[in-house]
Amino acid sequence: MNISIFNKILQLKKEKNAIILAHYYQRPEIQEIADFVGDSYYLSKVARDCSEDIVVFCGVKFMAESAKIMSPQKTILLPAIDAGCPMADMAEAEEVQKMKEDHPNAAVVAYINSSTEVKALCDVCVTSSSAEKIISKIENDEILFLPDKNLGGYIAEKFPDKKFILWDGFCITHAKVNKDSIIELKNILEDVQVLVHPECEKEIRDIADYIGSTSGIIERATVSENKSYVVVTEKGILHELKKKNPHKNFYTPGATMTCMNMKKTTLEDVYASLLNMKHAIEIDEKMRLKALNALVNMHNMAK
Ligand code: 13P
Ligand code: SF4
Image (cartoon, rainbow, N blue to C red; front, side, top):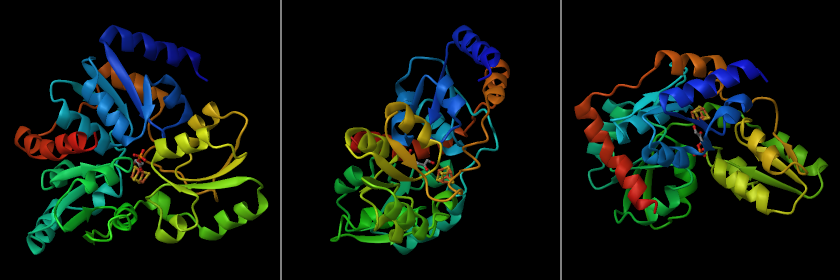
């Protein structure tokens, strides 16, 4: 580990009264330098509730934008400005507006992995850890869920009385996983559980012992007594899993479960971000206010 840059970041963070947040998919050294590491919902809450003036958000753009929507008075920094989310880019506001018009009675639910413009058109946001609880509180019979057809499909199975209209988006990282490679591992390993993120396709979810968000997967592996786990989500999660469970074995299927966008942030980026106050998220105030509603509803309904 690069101790000198580590110390430089810690000092600058103190001088500037900043806090560093990191998603579980970030590089191990970024998770180590962070004050808080977590899933999308948890990080959104920490960014909203923290007392620091500056939040360095080590994640992807929709996460930093969501923090700015909720806390406009804070400086929200995204160290790697080109760290986007291809899934979020799969839903454009203009098309969402058209879909809304085609389904006037539907509640419009956006995965937090969406742009600010799309959030502005939605009734409520969800994350993978909060979606079930939030949707259980929606009275509409019809739900327009976007952009992730896989998380939407997973949640729809839990509400058979509701009609779900699913957007055709997906996570390119979770789509890469191959069912046979999971089955192969399951057959070789003893005393194993398969832990799957709901962004995976149905055929993968169907062979899971547990389906949940990144924090759900970590919790499940930590409380279970099994020796081995096949972890079907982005590889960055292995850092926290191994830290919490040093005597258990973790495997990921194949070599492809890496989100290139989540891996863009380096320690050098975090240092430069704090030093030069880059890249500060700016959102048009009218747009921010429109998008705020969906995020406030998310936090209220997830309680
Ligand atoms: P969670 O950490 O909420 O499970 O989200 C996963 C993800 O893909 C974030 O981009
Ligand atoms: Fe987007 Fe998937 Fe990467 Fe998460 S893991 S940021 S959903 S591409």
